[in-house]
Image (tube, rainbow, N blue to C red; front, side):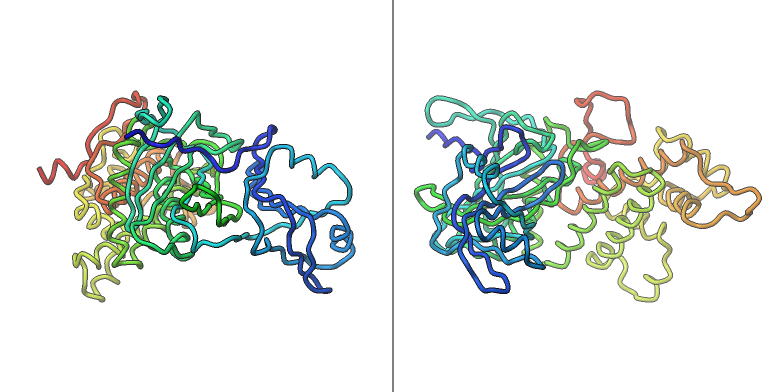
Length: 431
């Protein structure tokens, strides 16, 4: 049977980056109490992520002269029909006041049988088009989270924030749907898709749909989003269709280990920051912090290091070396990083391998030099290779934790085609 086409609930204004989520009466609560007012809820992705309430008429004048921001809500009985493009014209008419919102929730989630979500940011994937109703085709991919069956669609992705790069549907394996469950689903989508894209992707707006496909619930805040493409990405567009379901299956462990979910979430945050746009001097310590966090968590959980005194005495580099041994990741300095090999020789430490050199370079950056008259820091080539190595380690450990057993694009071998992939290293150690 053919699938249904999946499309966005909300479409951008012709200028791009602006989406009307609601157009109708709002409840405006200020010092004089709660009063209805004509209004709109708008999501903006450009130039930054914002959720705004537009208040029209007398309520806008009252807000202008009052101190503080009023509380804005959507009436319980308000229809949640997606506004048409013409509704934007209201913002150019008469008195208007704008209130920034942290979040808006409206409607009746209990009557929803499915969740629709929107993804913004640089998610680029080469998905195989599947047959959909009406004889057409659409790029779609299926994957599962604990308690959810999901379908993700990508059509002509807008990677610059002017539109949504992807949108999907999540069907619970059991009802009813809870607010906590939807919030956790959104967090998992952010973790997974951001890691695949190597960039923070915005998740939202999120809608509850009833059996007829009508919007009966709405939840949105300013999504956590970083526009632009990642510097280097382990997951090339053609890998997404194979990698996404595998990584999503790895979230099964979080059902019984919520602490590890928080740790992986934080470590992926470190990986995204280490691959950001900041100067490389900042990104190397961030990558090392992510590795230290995972070493602390994984070595204890897998009982590679359970003695408290031994754990406290173990240096950061030694702990990361042990972490890499657990993961099946080579600890020797890759041949493609000659500046780090020269650093090891210059340090007169024949037993050092990649982790020791990485953390020694990190220490040379974050600690003051020995001589004020002749300060020395690692040079540009040494810094770049240390960044390559640290982020390579961090990505691979995260892939290992999530149970990935596929191919990836290695950042320690730059200057290659996106089609030049290799299997993750632990496959060689376990075959």
